[in-house]
Image (tube, rainbow, N blue to C red; front, side, top):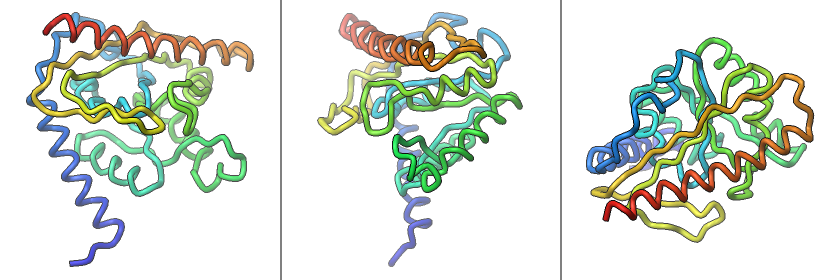
Length: 227
């Protein structure tokens, strides 16, 4: 039987959603401190950020959150992720950032930004990866611009498991496996001033990079202590 790209993506999305649900069910998560998750702090919509390649447990991190939209690319893998997102009860926004001006239209970068801005203004939270496109572990300014335009806070998170395969690809991805010990850590909220200029946003991006690295390192240390 031959499948078109849409059918193949839908099939892969069903399989990946089932796998992620199985991993979440079989992972023993360290109990979260009460009130630390963004939706427990207030009813305010937020922007959640983690590193690209470390997002496999994002659905577990967002367990209990309502009205969340997740940015996914226009590529085949983004279509698969969009299928997973929608099966999990969240909304997918299609598009991605780029460092190449000639690819902005192809990647739907500007319409996706406006769609995310409106989602935040209407009460829907967002989940994005923080990295500059194709540069691992260096935070870009897209989420910072969204926070500046809407006044919504940025929260950083690390969702890790002791059962994983760490890859050597460009984003240093970790493949979550079942039957591990899990840990989800959230940062304090980060607000961006409407008057923030490029220099200030650059400093915020550097701070986000450092905080995300530290969150992930802390989460792994906590798991090591539980052995």
